[in-house]
Amino acid sequence: KSVTDIRFVCRGTFVHSTAEEALQILEDALLGVDSKGKIAFIGEGTDLQRLSESFGFSSSAVTQLGQHEFFMPGMIDTHIHAPQYSYTGTALDMPLLQWLNTYTFPVESRFQDLEFAKKVYTQVVKRTLRNGTTTACYFATIHTDASLLLGQIANDFGQRALVGKVCMDRNDSVKHYKESSEESQEETYRFIKELLNKKYPLVKPVVTPRFAPSCTEALLAKLGEMAKNNKLHIQSHISENLEEVEWVKELFPNSESYTDIYHKCNLLTDKTIMAHGCHLSDEELVLFRKTGAALSHCPNSNISLCSGVLNVRNVLNHKVKLGLGTDVAGGYSPSILDAVRRALDSSKVLTIQDPEHKTLSFEEVFRLATLGGSQALSLDERTGNFQVGKDFDALRVNVAAPGGPIDLIQNEKPQILLEKFLNLGDDRNIVEVFVAGKKVVPFSEP
Ligand code: GUN
Ligand code: ZN
Image (cartoon, rainbow, N blue to C red; front, side):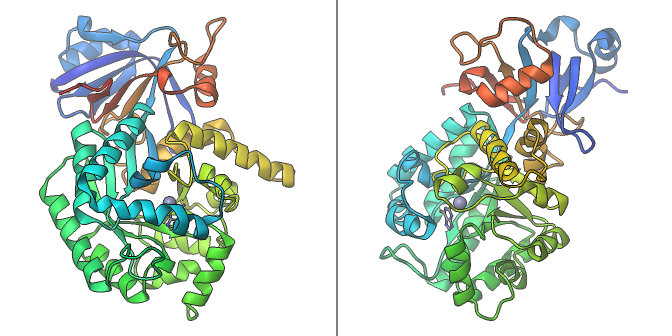
């Protein structure tokens, strides 16, 4: 193998998921990152001599991880509302439709103010990065310029992101927090064109009809066409709450199901991610599988808004792509570690209700937080695990970080260290965050 331009090399424990194994543990491994931020090689520590010769790095340039440390892939938040970060941790006392009208739409309508948007968007990007979210799939608001600003801020801080300008042309409860159908299409087109023109390496636009009740069928069809012609990502919400599902039946009397509405409008593709899906039928899951569309499981939100409990086991059995989402601020925590815990708890609730239900293991949920999320966002050629050729999106975790939330009384095996981190850890344990080979946490102040 020819000599590559190696930027840095790390030696220690690496944990990640593969197609075959929910948890693969590589002890005393050696991983090299090239000048483009891609994983150049991953081998055994004992092979240092040979690897340093064939890849042309000096063995003194190797960073050695500590006893209680490991690298894991960066976590992926497949569904988060950036503007809603401004009221996260509050306003969780009503069901979805009332919650949207009472809290969400009034707050989102403030984002035509770019100063306010800049403040909130900077906070949410920094907070999620610190929490180990290397990739986030964002809803912004209907405001094109503020949505472009979110893309710029994610790029400036080095977070990988999909960013969507929200589309809604009906059922406004808040005056002026709605567009005409033409405006929604034109502004979506402008948003996509301008975001692509910026040539941010890690930020992509995503076509974002808020959900069927906020959009006329004409708008949904136009957005589907735009996504198809430009091979774009698509995101929306589906089947989150039963009252919503009933309302959708009234609004779209000629459709067979909620899923069918999106499908007829070309909005179910292998680059589509739909949040929630708590109340989908098996037939609808089959349609997800056939089209390659993915679901985002947001358990904190589902519990906080009393929306429902997604049966993840059933989704996995249907081979539908699935990732985890925080759904800030329906979900109040901006951390995928919280989503991991809520997903495990939700699965246990299903087992309490039905002992035949096969509870999710922490290894399976770890996969959803990393590789599963990358597959759900169709970004798995670039990120999700430590496969050679992918970008190095990674967290350096110190389970025994001084001042952190975890006490160890002895040396533990990597599997135990990971389990403790997933159940007990927080940002104090995440000592470094890398996206595409660049250290983005701790922040480098400009
Ligand atoms: N459905 C439509 N809009 C929203 C939103 O902002 N949050 C949640 N949780 N569900 C929605
Ligand atoms: Zn949402």
